[in-house]
Amino acid sequence: MDAVSIHEVHPDAFNYVWDNSVVPALEVESGEAVELHVRDASDEQIHRDSGVEDVTKLDFSHVNPVSGPVFVKGARPGDVLAVELLEFRPPEWGWTAIIPDFGLLADEYPEPWLRISEVDAETATVRFGDGISLPYRPFPGTIGVAPSEPGEHPILPPSRFGGNMDTKHLRAGATLFLPVGAEGALFSLGDTHAAQGDGEVCGTAVEAAMYDATSRSRRRSTTCRGERSRRPRTRATTSARPWDPI
Image (cartoon, rainbow, N blue to C red; front, top):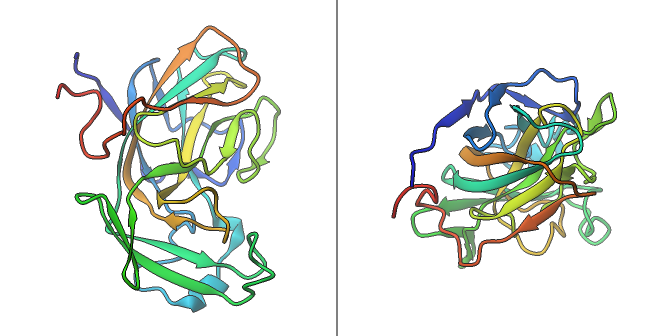
């Protein structure tokens, strides 16, 4: 397979809203790979040595940052952006919290709670604690492109342009198809997870930053009304780079 150029989005390039007027952090040709340094969902308000008191202090105006945006040359409104997820490289820890008045279990569990997990990408294991190990299956909880409508749009609600979908199947090897709403698509990614079940019932997954989350975006001259995805036919690896010869 031919070598692929990888372009890097600077770690300081992130936003808390979708907005088609944001200046792109990077411009790439269709099909070129991009490496993003993704901040965790708390935007570094929770640390490896945090206690439950840090959960109660969360500033919700600075959560779920998305890295980017990336301008894909040639992508125009009406096109489709095919985003292939290639690789995730996590730190050695992640966090899960119950946040008061947040999530589906808020009425049953009103008190704050925090669990720091150990993440081992080499063994594909998340040591959740108390003898419980989970499979390490990283994916971005938030992924999308800028909406066609002007102005700032909140990160959390999913829309036809993507958003905070928390779809665990969007792992390395999967491809997400997004309708382009703005010139260049302005693709962003964030809220990366080390592990998650079928949704965030307590409001969080095993939240983890990613030293790099690598993706490749291609512009397609076709249409779709909302996001679509294609999963890999075989179980994806999180260590080898899928575009390298194996």
